[in-house]
Every structure is written in structure tokens, then in C-alpha cells.
Image 1 (cartoon, rainbow, N blue to C red):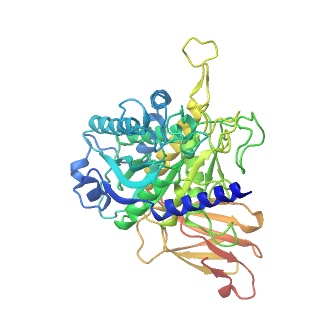
Image 2 (image 1 turned 90 degrees about the vertical axis):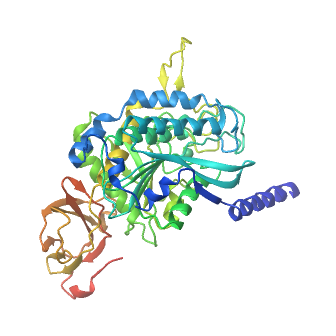
Image 3 (image 1 turned 90 degrees about the horizontal axis):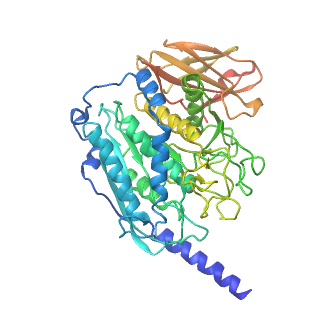
Amino acid sequence: MKSKILVYLSAMVMLAFTEANSQTNMFLSNPEALKVFQGDYNPSHYRPLTVIDQPDSVRMGIIRGVDQSEQIRLLTKLETFHNRNSGSDTLSLSTGIGACRTWILSCFDQVSKNSNNRLVTGYLEFDADICSKGHHKNPFALLPGMDTSNHEILVIEGHFDTRNEGRCDTVGYTPGIDDNGSGTVLVMELARVMSKYSFRHTILFTTPTGEDEGLFGAKAWAEFLSSKGVKIRTVLNNDIVGGIYCGKTSSPPSCPYCGHVDSTHVRVFSYSSGNNPYANSAHKQLARYMKYVQEELINPHISAPLIINIMLGEDRTGRGGDHTPFRQKGYTAVRIISANEHGNGTGKAPDRNHTTMDVLGKDINADGILDSLFVNPGYLARNTILNGVVAGLLASAPEKISSTMEVKSDGVVVHLPEGYVNADRIIIGVRKQNSNSLEFDTIFKVNRADKFLVRLSIGQKNYISIAPLREGAPGLFSDEYEIILSDIDPEKTHRQP
Ligand SMILES: [Zn+2]
């Protein structure tokens, strides 16, 4: 009993220690990056030889450009670093987190060279005590936007560190292929594919460190960017995005039974505030936007469709991820994760998550070639396309619209701001509370007009939001208006939650 109390106390002390001594001494290894983050640069310095910026062309370019074999090549290389724990070796040139981050940065540099030096690359460095190492680095590549009048950036991230059964096992074999080599190569591949195109807004591609030891790298980013006044439109956090097999211990809400296979769904987790989880949050609105984009603008163009499950919570029960530090700083952020997860992170065999078994696949006949891949290349590629298209469209789309809604007896009249011309068309999303659905029940488009009527049925609670559509690029949906139509006093039945 006594020893149990001691263990508990030391865990509490450790928690307090890591909280009190979180990220300090944060800086960018490349000073040019801060100017890009703050919009203080000349866009012509980052122009490609051939400008492709029309949203439809960019979207189709991303859909066709993501290369499965390139992602598998990157994953094969990631496996060779042996252990990517944040406390692992930083001196070796071939193994440990030091060699791995050097390699990721060199890949970003190579991509930049191949695209007329358009990327600004480097590390966000910071001090924190993680598994006995004090100094850490998040590799990144920035693709500067072509329009500096609005400085909102887009973030695509996936942590590159790994953990084994032991939180601070810094030497044992820890391949970390699904968790989170998959998210790492998703980010790396999008830096390659998207650097061929031009966007209005700046896009940050980054692979934070220290996720599995306490979200350290993402906390450093969120703190650093908010301290510099950097505005972020959205954060897409990718963590475990390649596996399709359900493990024995997968954290709920997850897959149905051990061995179940699902390569057609992906989960998007996001925070929503208040007692009513179905109510409005910018994060949930981003998840709904992603579902809309996937179904309307991606699925018709790929051979196997991907279906987004909008999840109720911010993450799986009792689990967390790198989107949360951004959300805590007021940024709009979601986590993207496979429908089926191979384990609950406690490193219990036969599940692979956080064990030596989180490898790329199995060589059944020992001929040196993997016969069965644990990361499904097509599934990973489709999750990569989802990220690229969503971030790409948002990087060219207009800002959210702040409209007013006037309740009538048969619906609401939406009034756009006076003189509004930022969109060609307006997308309207309607959710009916009675269906308890997290998704829009109805989405439709109207031509831009100063005001337009949305018809609703009486007696039902409706949530309505609108999004701008300009030159094929839809913007984010506004906050939702809660509207109940009744013939008693329509003036008092609508509010913006
Ligand atoms: Zn992870």
C-alpha cells in the first residue's frame, strides 16, 4: 500500500514538474520563417515558375498528385531510425530522433529545391524536460501565401516521435509506423504535392515532437504562434491515419471487434463546448466542412470513396492529441484518425500501437519483401488527399461570413453584410436538432444576394450556418444559428449560441 502511494505521489510530482517546466526558450532556426508567419514578406520571392492557383485545378492536382509508393518509401525509411522517442539519441547520423528530424528537414529542403526554392524550412526549437532530454526540435516547411493582406495561415501536422511500452524507452526498437509514421509521411507528401501550386494563404507543414510524452511539440507551436500574434484559420492534426485493422484494445469510441477491417471511414474528432455537445463550435463546423468537401469535391474523383465520421468528443475516451494545445489557445483544430485503431496505447500484445510490432508489414515467406502491409497505402493516400484538398481550398477561400438572420413564419431571411461581394454563391447548411445528428441534414447553394429566405418547418429546432463559395473554393461555415419556428413570438426564438 505504501509503495502504491509513493508511486502515485511521484507521478503527481512529475506531472507538476512537466507542467511548470513546459516549453521555454522557443525560437525558429530560420528567421525568415517568422516574417512569413507575420505576413511581412514579398510574395513574388516565393512565386513558382508556372503559377497554378485556380482552385479546381489545384484540387484535381492534389487528388492526382498524392503518390502511394512515395509514402511507402518514406515509411520504409522512417522505420530505419529504430527509436524516435523524444529522449532518444541525437548524436547518431542513422538512428534516434536526432537523425530522423535531420532527415525530415532534408526532405523538406529537397522539395523546396525542386520547386524553385518556394519553401521556408527549419525547426521550431524549444527546451523542455522530456525523458531526460532538455532540447527539442519540430521540423517544418512553410509555403508562403501569394496574398499578404490577410495573414491567417493553415496548419497540417502529424507528430513524428514514437513511444514503446515504456514511456521513456529511448533505446528499444520502436518503429512507430502507424503511430505516427503515417501522419508524418502524410505531411511530408503534402509539402511535396502542394508546393507545385499557389495559394492566397500561407500553409505550415510540420511534424511536431514529444506528442507521446505530453503533446510537447504541439504546445510549443501553439504557444509560440499565439505569442507572436499569428492567426490560424485551421489546424488539421493527423495521428494514426494508415491502419485499417481493429485491435483488441482500441480506445472507444472505435471499432467493433478485433480483426474488423475498415478502409472506407475516417474519424474526425473535435471539441465542442457547453452541455449540449450537438451545439455549435468552430471545430465541429470545420469537421462538417471537411465532410462536405470530401463528399462533394473529392469522392466523385477517386475510385474508392472515403466517408468521414464526425465524432462527438475532442478525442477518444481518456486519450489526447496535438490538436488540443492549438484549441486551448483559441485556434480551430481537429484530429483526423483511422476508423480502426490497433490498440489503446498501453502497448499490450497482440495490439501494435506503442509496441515493437508497429511495423510497416509482415514478410511471411522471408524473401525480404513485405507480403502484408499494416498501413494500407490507398487508405493513407486518401486521408492525405482529404488534408491537402481541405487545406488547399481553405488557403484560397474567402473568410467566414457574419450574417444576420431574421425569423419569419415559414423560415429565416439571411441578410449578408452590406455590400458583400466576397463570394459568388452562398452554401447553406441546416441541421435539425431532433435528428441528434452531428452532420448537416441538408446542404444547398444559392446565388449571392443581399438577402434570401431559407424555408424551415415549424416546431423543430434548426441549426443554420452559411459559407462563402468563390471560384470553386468554399470557405468555412459561419457559427450556427439556433432557430425554432413557432407562431408565438418569432423575435425571441433565435439566437446565436
Ligand atoms: Zn500518436
